[in-house]
Length: 194
Image 1 (cartoon, helix red, strand yellow):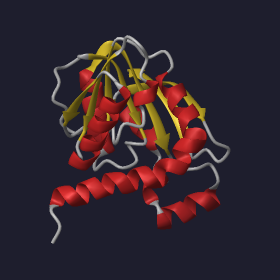
Image 2 (cartoon, helix red, strand yellow; image 1 turned 135 degrees about the vertical axis):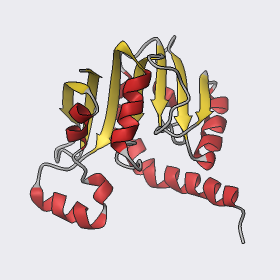
Image 3 (cartoon, one colour; image 1 turned 90 degrees about the vertical axis):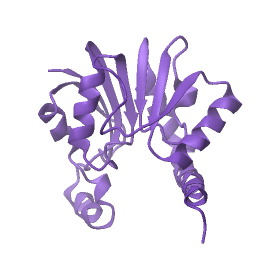
Image 4 (cartoon, one colour; image 1 turned 60 degrees about the vertical axis):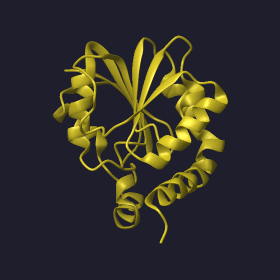
């Protein structure tokens, strides 16, 4: 029987392989857009294996949180190889280990579609965000076309969530929403506290 850390490491490697086509294509443009204009003290939630590291703005003080040990280990290696100055913290985004109002920006990419309780995660994001801060999310959401949405309901329901409905319920105002693909599957949200 394999050790759990071996499985976590394998899972992180598989994740990178599966995500590679997206990252090699439009994903890099989407991530660059997500981080444009970000500054100050920044929290990245669900940092995964560090796909956002190349887009961290110069001068920003970034703390990245990831729950998965395998993902975190891979992110640490990626940050060290690239010389990225990031504080990597093991943690659950449902219970962030930071004081209230600690961050100027909170950034997440493709994370709300896969967490256990996205509303609770958003409540934590709101809690740690400064009163004048901004939360940014690059997310898979329910596509515009009902036919594709029904297919996703059956085969990949995490890609068919109405994430935008959670923002006001969690106490956020949507400052902007951009569709980044022709089907409306990938969207970029900028939020402020209501």
